[in-house]
Amino acid sequence: MKILVCVKVVKGELNPFDESALECALQLSDDVTVVSMGPKSSESALKPLTRLGAKVVLISDNCFAGSDTLATSYILSTAIKGMEYDLILCGRQSIDGDTAQVGPMLSQMLGIPLITNALKIEVNDDSVFAATRLGDESVKLPALVALERGYVLRFPSIFSKVGEVKILDNEALGCDLQKCGLTGSPTKVLETFENERGRRKCRFILMDELLPLIDELIKQNNVESQKTYDGTKFKSVWAVGEEVYEKAKEIAEEVILIEKSDPQTIYEKAIAEKPDVILWNADFWGRKNAPIVAAMLNTGLCADCTALETDGKNLIMYRPAQGGNITAKIKCVTKPQMATVRTKSDSSDIIISGGKGVADSIDKLYELAEKLGAEIGASRGLVDMNRMPYDKQIGLTGKTVSPKIYIAVGISGAIHHTCAVEGSTTVIAINPDKDARIFDYADYGIVERF
Ligand SMILES: Cc1cc2nc3c(=O)[nH]c(=O)nc-3n(C[C@H](O)[C@H](O)[C@H](O)COP(=O)(O)OP(=O)(O)OC[C@H]3O[C@@H](n4cnc5c(N)ncnc54)[C@H](O)[C@@H]3O)c2cc1C
Image 1 (cartoon, rainbow, N blue to C red):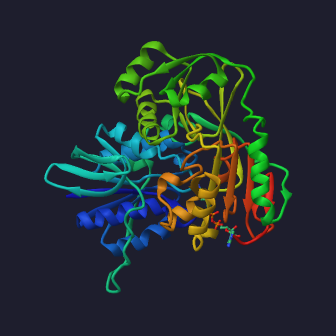
Image 2 (tube, rainbow, N blue to C red):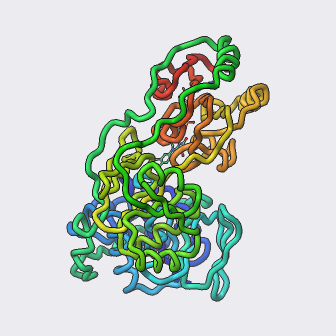
Image 3 (spheres, rainbow, N blue to C red):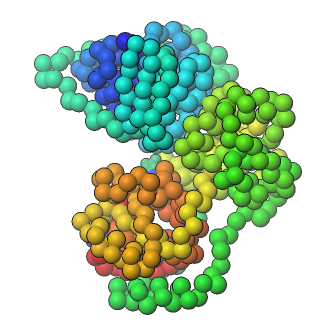
């Protein structure tokens, strides 16, 4: 069986989700080709993969630079159309862009079935079976599967030899230049700036004052709710699924609720009715299907937006970027303008979340949660250590929450976490590091070990 594995090199290293996809491929077949699009400098990170027995192809040309997910998927699909394959594996997402859009867009452009969020897969003569975060799925080959970090990439044998990386430029591929690079990218980053959203003035207290403070906050209860956008609006926007209705209402006079049906149905409706804007919830379903519809409509899609604005014509989308404390302001120059957006997914009054700092004291965290009648949450740091299940993860790639009281214990406060708790009425942070970023996003801080 011929397997292609699409990988991205991020800061000189293989994207971890793609490592998982590659290991999966190596377990299934000894005919594996790694396909990567990137600058020539990626070659040094890709070359060692030849020692695992994989053939490696690097798609690289200056005219591909600056490609967004739609343009990247187009270039990859053009290259892959000239290759033989039974199965294509991708990582769920890259850890820098974090859009999870290339896999679904690529499957659409190649016209093959798709499975996302796969944890483990098996293949028989003509089908691929996957255990996914949403249950078991199976589709006919050829197919594309986007994998979670379920596999750990093996080390090469000490006897293995380094092979060559085959480089393909646009002379070899013949891509339409209007669809490549910055020219071919409908989503444009207008500016990036230090993330100020969600910043709070922190008052430091002692651990002994925590429970009385919470009692007081519960009694007050008449606290201000989350501030939402209230500027100029579109006449109407589409909201795919009820989850995104409230967010759509912030930017539109009229929200047209679209049923969460298959991509073809939504595509045909969009072609017939030509909406200006289509919003999707950034959950598993939205993250899988919005990129497919975007590829069908040949329009841009901005992933995981935390805030939206408009001047009545253009949709301005904000999302965390560059894996750090930066927010990118993005506009889409094609129609319909599409975004997956973070929505409130929890209604608990009190949430107490643990981070890597409580990995050794999780029992204490549960005790406090029980005492307060609080729901438990977690940072990705703790989830990645397998100390909490993924469905507890709060953050950019987890849930967005807006409880009355959010207590972050042993969490450093990366933007990927704080962006999902901005709607909380009161944030309390417990961390022995007085310089931890979380304190800039908390109303109360306790500088102590938990
Ligand atoms: C694309 C992308 C998406 C991401 N999505 C998410 C997401 O959805 N959610 C998320 O949370 N992260 C996400 N992350 C990861 C995020 O950037 C951080 O790496 C992660 O939040 C760190 O987890 P942490 O705060 O638990 O661990 P750390 O950053 O390691 O912090 C642990 C903290 O515990 C403190 N500590 C140590 N001992 C104690 C003690 N005894 N008591 C109290 N505190 C103690 C330390 O001082 C430290 O501040 C994402 C990252 C990327 C690149």
